[in-house]
Image (cartoon, rainbow, N blue to C red; front, side, top):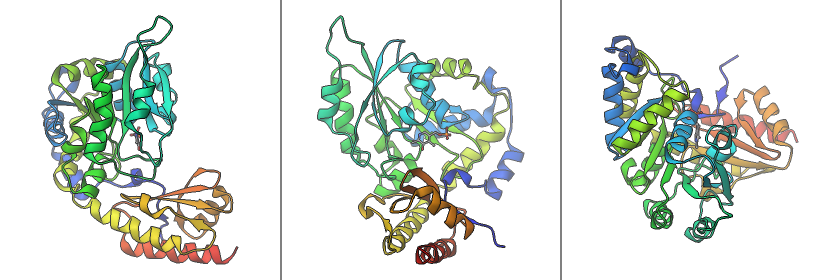
Length: 343
Ligand SMILES: *Cc1c(COP(=O)(O)O)cnc(C)c1O
């Protein structure tokens, strides 16, 4: 029995030998005292890569997003969000529960919001209304298919908020996938937003970790919010060391994951009973609509050694990553074709 081809998520990636070596050798200190040199190095490097003044190392992307919300808003504010965004849909109601922030969800198309939608959602100054305190964007857009908005599209959305004095937080969990897909620096995607979060623990293959970046004074306040949420870590350099290796050596190879996703999508699209919107396959994700219930299809695929995630009644997500080779993709296609042949 060979190991399954695990296409559920890029979070399943294991750290590389270079990461494990760096982790073992990292100089450490107590980061709550600001004394961990490896965390400091990672934070400086991260800030530089996304073009912000400063950055903050956090254990998870979810904590990074919630720290950003707490830092940007006041209780009772309204945040304009995409209804299909991670920050609204997949963070346990943290906006309301932690921040006391009411969400104003907007419908996007394949992860695309339009400036006019944001314009219409921003509250007028009226005694009845909450104050619009934040615009949250997500790029690449996970539920939208891993789709990437261009820097100028992001800038147009941010401009609407900024004209009204509203800050923008960008959930860029996979910002480097977006950057590689477009052939632009990650900083170009992050530039129009006030703050950005990205994950080390996904396609970049770190065992743990995400970063939030923004203006230095804002990051100083975010550091307090991280402490509040229990995210003040001590010798966290042991984790940050892997992040430095990731930013230095693991970004370019994301192109391979994107090529694998493209190959997988084109192969799956030929199978009866499966439908794929091929133009939305832009990074390392393939969303497939199924005639049969998604749970059932995933179960059959798993029995053949191919793991994918049911993300809706009739929708399955496949995510490519470092630990699935070109041969793994071919094997997934072969097994999917056998599965479909049995229907
Ligand atoms: C994974 C993800 C997150 C959260 O990251 P965790 O480290 O899993 O908490 C946030 N936003 C998006 C778009 C994601 O894909």
